[in-house]
Length: 563
Image (cartoon, rainbow, N blue to C red):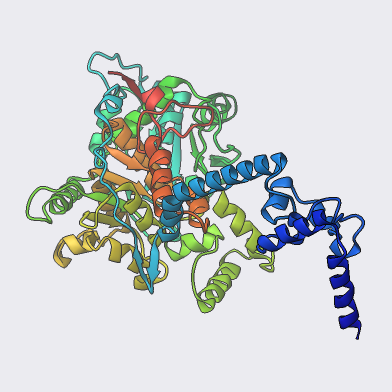
């Protein structure tokens, strides 16, 4: 009944309406696709007075273009027409920007996260080979020349044996390269104090368990003769000094209070008086006991003279290194360049770094037990090591893993066919750890691969001799790549700089590489660009010295001259 009554009222209302109202109603009926709020006149259907037609506050709060689009306003009104034009322009502009961004979005989505990993194999996209892949630019590499050698017209200022201040004796500790630095420093200290140097003793290293003597590795006659106009050097303790064991055991004959990186003035004020008093004194310990920027320039030049000219390996070591380098250059049947890679990823290095590396739970547990055993004071309970490892990696203080080295070299443009000589101890993790590097660069060889067992047996008598072979083959390479700090790498880079900055020596920016490897949005193209820009100045080019600089890695200012 209610429906019928409502319909009847509407019918009566419609039939009893005025002609104007009937025209409006017929107009609304003629446009059925428009709502009644648009078709009816304002005085006939007033929203504010009709509760059935009330508009919600949310819709009223919409911008004018959206209200018009939702037909909440009359599109024929001037304000609605203007709003429509603004909306259409905005949508057109947005659509145009979307079309422009589609290629970059697709490229970003299709790029791999640096490299794809399948099992133990890394797959990196190809990289265009740069023009300066195997040598530094000629213009940047020919502006300096070595000038630390002894010149024929230089006058000797070495006093007679009786006029010197006394004798000094040192133990050269550590591995081959640490011993080399100690020998250079010993000559410099003897010069500072005007003393006679007794030929240094190579102390047995606790890690290498090697008992090599100076004469087993270096040419003694050349060493003494080349420096005869700089420092008086004798091959042994004088015969008149009968208590020779005192130099190894007696506190009375030992100077032990020398600080690290001591100045020349410290030796004059504190060590020289004791040498004059006792006539023969042992300096111990002697690792890094002479500074760089707190000694006269001529003393630093003398250290370079010892390192680059006076210290020569025995002829048989030199000859074998030449053979290994020649075999590296002829592995493809013709002359080819080769790279030398100093891979620092032995178990001891990994443990001592206290960095975290990729590995199974079992490997991590074994490494934790190893660190706790070897370095209990640093390990403590192990709870503080994880944040420490993260911080060290961010700061670039962790050794690069073989897989990380492979990705960096590929990003630099080195092709799969690159011949790489690997100077390394036993890599922690063995073949599985080396697999990503070997799969990407299959031409990895060591000295044992290049030489027969009979060739190598002669050098296995002394571990230091094997290290010397690695040193020389790396020194002769077209490109040298270091993966972590240490005396070996910095001596190689310094010597190659001294020989001429044309030889490329790559020192990866481990801090930046760590950041890139940890970026989930880093694509291959962006990574390649970052590597190229960052390492433009990290290839052994001329580099000015600065306070506390390392003479062995950068001999530019004291030991080289403008060409």
